[in-house]
Amino acid sequence: MDWKTLQGLLSGVNKYSTAFGRIWLSVVFVFRVLVYVVAAERVWGDEQKDFDCNHRQPGCTNVCYDHYFPISHIRLWALQLIFVTCPSLLVIMHVAYREDRERKNREKNGENCPKLYSNTGKKHGGLWWTYLLTLFFKLGIEIVFLYLLHRIWDSFDLPRLVKCDFHPCPNTVDCYIARPTEKKIFTYFMVGASALCIVLTVCEIFYLIFKRVVRSMQKLKKKKRSLTYSKASTCPCHSRLDHDGKLKISPVEALRASAPNLTLI
Image (cartoon, rainbow, N blue to C red):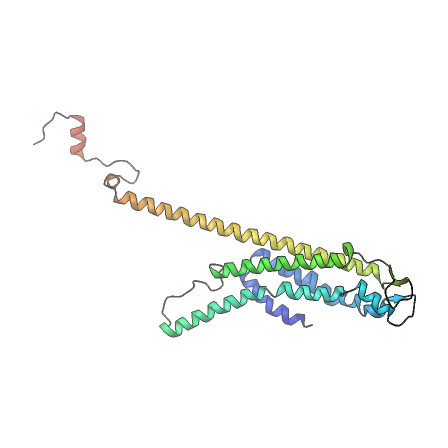
């Protein structure tokens, strides 16, 4: 698998990601993709060939291996990395769609026409929802794959010895997994990196929602202030208020107030 191509595609997501998103992408490529390519892939190697049973009955080893390893760790992690990184491409596609709309608008109405978007990469409107949905997709995929890994291999454990009594094995056969301790260490490391990505994704979801709520409250406050100001400006009594909020009284009105019986000519 060409991980460099995938990294090149996802590097553009950094421009539109939050701080949590940038950290998530760094964790994925440094602690997961790099470890997968450099070390984990070589540790597993040809697992079926290294799966040794103390019986030479034809087909017995294959049946036992298929029962205890319905899918290889290394292939499951490859699928997980592909599925968990692909939703980020939706953000790039949405930004490209906005840029294409902007280009068509300029071609139709001229270069000096009003822009459709102040910033095509800013997370407002539909792009905000697209970004949030990609986070939920990534979170769901991470949880599903962790559950599968835990379900297939109980508590992510790799025992040294497994017993098999499936047909065509003539009796209970002892089978040995190659390098179980080393594989167990890599399994725990990959599970820990996946758990860290889950935490970062949850933090980014809460950050986006919190930021959206704060922005909405600020807009609501500004709207209320403008509405209050517009009502005050139309009221006759408020039109006579000075900058300090005090009522402006003319000298004649002040004189009348001090001497109500005085007749002014």
